[in-house]
Length: 391
Image 1 (cartoon, helix red, strand yellow):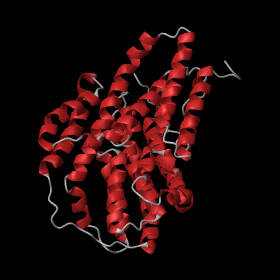
Image 2: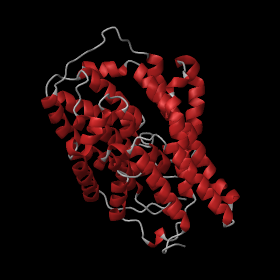
Image 3: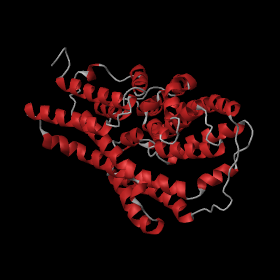
């Protein structure tokens, strides 16, 4: 114990702080810092005779799920991008002020079925095309926010929600986050679309020769169904296995290139390192503060500064949260800052003026903190806090 807290918390806190600094300074050392933090924690645990066999027996399935699901969903998103559906979306966007608004709502909708990072990247690709690379910083931030909000209540839409899901919280419980997510999407879409239309309106640039690839389109619902089936069938809670088996069937039909998932591999190993480190923390001291709405709200704000994956893992291990509230908080709260979510970090790579976007993020996306507060209030008004005890 050091100043009333176990030493593991200081090692973990230093790891999270190092990752935050790496993101702020664009050092691109997130994985290395997370791995070093995990090694230090494991080394310390060995010194206090920690029972690793028992620990691994409890955690192995969660780690394998992450290892399979993130690359699998990344590949699914790539099939969506190559299917011709994004070009079809362009055809239905009006040229007036409602066009940018509809695009952001569509991005939020897509992230229900695709990973939020994939939905954000697809949205950025479409935005650059229809605004001829003149995309307002506030609109870029809104793309991230809407993709995070849409994925917050979907068990396949965000890594944090997926983690909650394969720990035993079903979609019927998590769907209540729909209220907070919808409120946030509408607020962000309204203000960001006005900014974008005044900055540069839609200029349609449609490829009339683009065709729909039906096999790639059909692969998407099958991959989703595989994940859901293996998570609920006989309480396996193994959606990663369903994703893997479905991809084995479809890859010979739709094709595969390593480039499709190359960037997701390092991200997956980074998340596994963080989740493994978080699982090693003794939670007796934290459990003195029972889960509540106010604590969940604070966790959402913290996710704008620190990575939301370990925050989610800590909440799962503490147990007793209303996980619909938690899913919205950690899923959407990170949108407040560009480095607060993986979608925010990923989308900056799509724009040449990344430094300008970072400097103006908070100033131009002032409506995102407002959307978070109002979305959380909307959930409180509609649903009572329901503590959910994981098995």
